[in-house]
Each structure stands twice: as structure tokens, then as C-alpha cells.
Length: 457
View 1: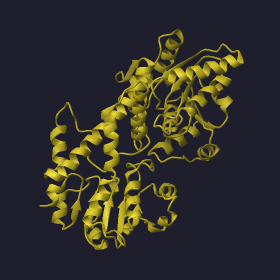
View 2 (view 1 turned 180 degrees about the vertical axis):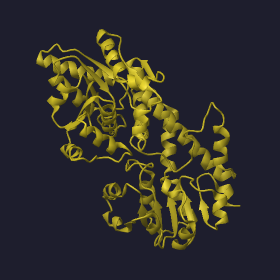
View 3 (view 1 turned 60 degrees about the horizontal axis):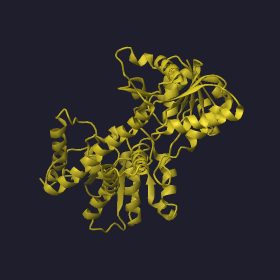
């Protein structure tokens, strides 16, 4: 099938590359010439495990191409995926300007039937706005070309996006019941047929329900995280071990083990903005989603927990103190630092007079860019950030180590070397990577999240 992907970010590039891997003829469009140049020179503009190899293989086979030519992109694909960004607007709602601009460009150049697929995460009702934008452009051209707008939200985890796309647990597709909608359904069924050979993974529904499903899924996952973080904070006070609690409640099949890990808050491009966007949608209908408001408030507070633990341990006297930070990205296997907890912690430490040495396996360059934005009002603080070449180097002469991202490389360090490099053996573990009992045996002062009962043994 001939497929056009509009946008070469995480969603667009992964979708395009994986569909090409299945044998489709894919045209990837982006208005950012820099991204297209990188892709055409053999690189990729994002860090996503396994993606570079798939892109290279399909470029060599001629199944994927990258361009800024809008007219050519519209002419190419029978199915046009809109996979552009939907950043939060000032009021928290999703900014649809890029989605609607993509729709208008399709309308400007299309001459035959097109299936226009909203792959971007968009609020309920966006398909109607996309259809209106398409009709407006077609009317201006006095063209009678037909189309159908479909909702096909993505469920890709950064760091595991290729695996998630190629082995999906579900495919959600929303179509209308018109003749054009039935035609679109037939094309989408053909496109996704390779994923349904073992068993049917596609959930067909109306367009608005499909749009809602994406937000509901992310809101539910964010809720589980914030709920466990609240319990972890209480566990620290009552003397319970949140890890034991997690195992205890996770064994209930009605609850399950996924997304029950306590930590120092969630970040990234999806959960924060999607929770806000869903709240904003509710407000437009005169409703307040009290649970989601609490989820967001808990998460904002949770990002301050590590800093509070450090302040308390050092009697609120951080001037002249030096800390090692392991992990900068919001999660492992990505260089994405959007809404990352590390930014909150490092900001508090630096503004309290401390210095830091930081290390992350892949996001060091992105960190330099992000910190320039974070400290635009106090650029002199940037001099108090040292970028280490490896985890152990970051520990040199540090008063303590703080772990913010659960990279696998941090799970089994040489603790003798850790103790030798730190001024004193103190670890603040924002992801509960280590067992407190083991830390006690090693004579390392350990501060986890919701695990203070074992720290005192």
C-alpha cells in the first residue's frame, strides 16, 4: 500500500519505518529541512532503540523516502497519517495548529479519495475539525474529491516504540458509518492485516470513542503512578515498605503489577500533556475531573521528594555541597527530557547553592540544551553543572549520589567503587533500584521512596 506519514517525530518516524518494514511504500513528510537532511544522510533525529536499523534497511530497499515536498506527499499516499506534535497550549489544551495545517495541506493538493488518519494524540472532536479543514480547502478549489477521517491513536512507549508497533496488544481504529467510512475501514483493515494473523487485535469503534480511548489510557496509567507515589510517601511515615505493598496488591488480578512502581514522578511528552488536555476538555463541558486534578498535583509534588530528602539529610545547608546525579532522561532508553524529574531536582540543588556532576547514557547533549532553557534567568548556575563521561566519574568527591532514571546500567554498580569515590556513602534512590537491606550490609546510607522502614534497620 502507498502510505504518507506527515511528521517525523517519535510517532511518525516509528510508524513510517515499521509500515515500510511490512512491505508498504512509505513517504515521510516534514517541514523541518534539518530533520529531512539527517534522515536522507542515513541518520535519525531521535533516539529510539532499533529504529535506525529499520530506517536504513528500508531506505536501501526503496520502501521509505523522506521529503519536504507537500504536493508529492499528498499525491503519494492513499492513506495519509497525520503524526505531528500536539503540544499543550497556555490553558493546558492540546494545540491543534499543526494537525489542522496538515489537514489543509492535504485538502490543497488531493484529487482522489484519501483516508486521513489522525495518529497524533488529539482531543475528542478533532476529526470533525480536520474534516472541516479538508472541506474548506476542497471548496476553495471547487473539487469534489472524497475523503474519510479516521482516528487511529498510537500506544507506543518511548524506548520500546518499535517493539510496541510491531507487536501491538491492541489496535484502535475509529471510523464513521458513511460510505466513505466503510471504504476507509476496508483500507485500514488491509493495512493492519499482518498484525492480526495470530489473533484479532483491532478494536473498531466510532471516531470520538477512539479519540477518547487514547486519553483515557494515559490518564489511567498516570493515575496508577501518582496513587502509588502517594502511598509511598505515607509508607515513609508509618514505617511500611512500599515494595512489599506493591507485590501484595499487584498479585490481585484485578489490580496487576504494571505501573505500580513508586518513584520521583512521571514525565515525558505524553502523560503530563494528555492529563492536562483531558482536564481541559472536561472544563469545556462544565465538568471538573477531580481525580485527574489530584493526579497532576501529586506528580508535581513527587518531583520535589528527592530534593526534600536531600535537604532534610543535610539540614537545609546545601551551599558548598556537591552531588552526583545518575539519569537525566524522563525514562530509560530515550534522550527525551520533557518534564523530566531530573530537571526539578537539579534546579533545586543549584538554586540552593550546591553543585552537581551529571551522567546519562544518551541524553547528555539534550541536557545541555534543556538546562540552558531552565536557567535562562540565572545562566551563571550553568557553570555549576559538570557533565561526567561515565557513572563512576560523576561520583568523584560528591557528598551523595541521587538516582533519577532507572537505566539498567545503574542497577548493579561496583558498590566498593561507589563508596570509595563518594565523600560519604549516601545514596538517594528515586527509582528504588537497590534493596535497603543490601545497602545496610554494605554500610551505605540509603534513602529510597517509601522504604524508610528498612533504612532504619
